[in-house]
Image (cartoon, rainbow, N blue to C red):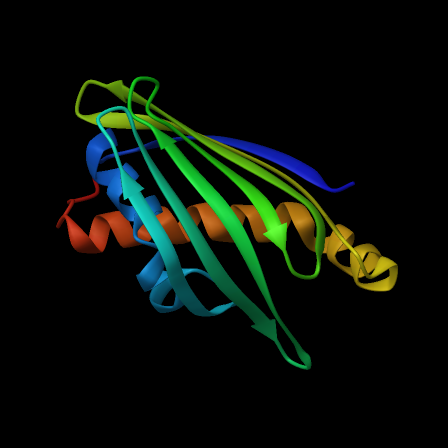
Length: 151
């Protein structure tokens, strides 16, 4: 099963980074290979935000939609994503955010497996590169939205 983990310091507040990750409706504007998104349900309580959403991922001949559960736990500043339905046999990704002076440390961990074994083999070859591109896209989006000046 493909898995990867990235730890990155980003010159942005953790609160703003969390906003970017929870801004699922706008993923098609900045997340690589994301061509569509739809929020089915969003529940906000004192200690967490729960979202059920579809993401449509596509490249070339491949285009699939999967439904996932997204849970943001305010007490730990962490986001957990799991698969509900679609072409994924398994999905688990976690985002952890820590404040560090004027920036934040972001840890992104992802594991997944497609139901289609041939596509699984293809994606496995490029998985680390893809995860890096996705993490970089979230950083770039935060910089654009919050007018962060890079040194």
